[in-house]
Amino acid sequence: MDIQEILAFAALAVALAFLIKKFFFKKKKSDKNCGSGDCGCS
Image (cartoon, rainbow, N blue to C red; front, side):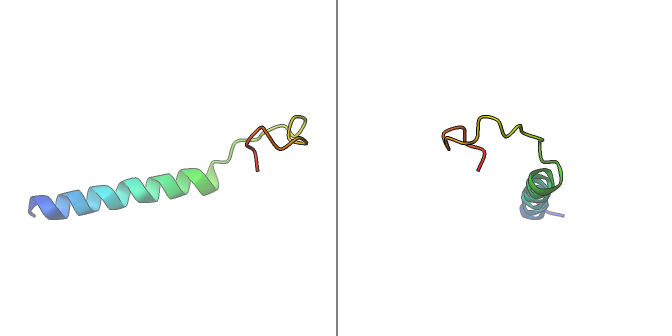
């Protein structure tokens, strides 16, 4: 296995980890400050 394959698999692993974290581990945010639209929770 050469260095290019190792880097490709590492990039794939990082991308998959990011997607899994983004879609399956959402933080529960309170909606009390989200009415004005400036809190960034949309």
